[in-house]
Image 1 (cartoon, rainbow, N blue to C red):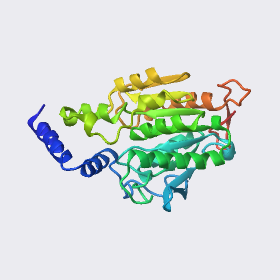
Image 2: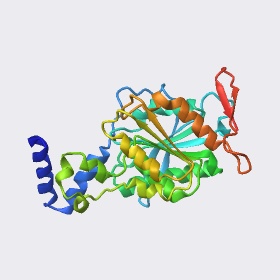
Image 3: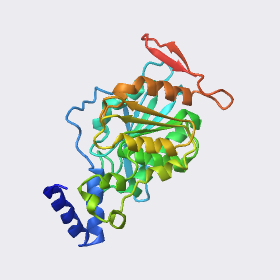
Image 4: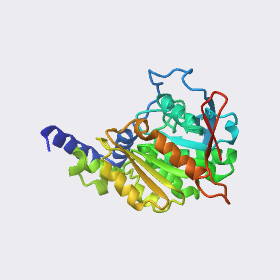
Length: 301
């Protein structure tokens, strides 16, 4: 280990010994990296979205949410819906191009900022609070889209860990998508300078994704870049191994941690439509394409 990395780890251990509260706050700052300012590349004209609020918790807190109608269809109200959960160091404003891509796939998209991010209620996020936020968003979506097979949970990076926990708790749905998602905070920390520390004793935030996947009751799609330096591809293979059937692993050759869908977006789209377009008495995979008013593919089931 390099001297600078060892010094950092020793300093973290010394800080941990000063008190559990300080240790917990430090971990949450490092893991979530909440962003409140708009991304400098954001403009309200990029995405045709409807902003609104979702109440969460018991203290009057709320989530800032966006509803993005499906594009390329003449009947967006009948399109399947996706709950998108972003990762760390970003908020809704930094997710606009991702959300536009999902809308162009033909999905209505619900996206939220967790408490502590963007315009949502201010707080230092935790594993517990972001899980509550995801559940509140899912309940809002379920009230709008009654058929669970027409609802998808999609998480990127840390958002994938949150998505897996939500999927384990809410029962059947159309699909769970984990993009660039790690296996656990412990596994990520073990690859860093903090790996020399007694992690099992010190960690207060865990996100044990394989344990969550073992309880999931929906199709699982795992998407991973082959050149991801933050989350190594072997973690995707481990997640795929424990996921229930039906499942699929897409490895994007040459892709890093972000914009994996730029490489495998078409295949991701086909897979999700196959999984979400079957009624209770219709075989999965009954999706059909027609042409919308603008000449772009408009899908119907």
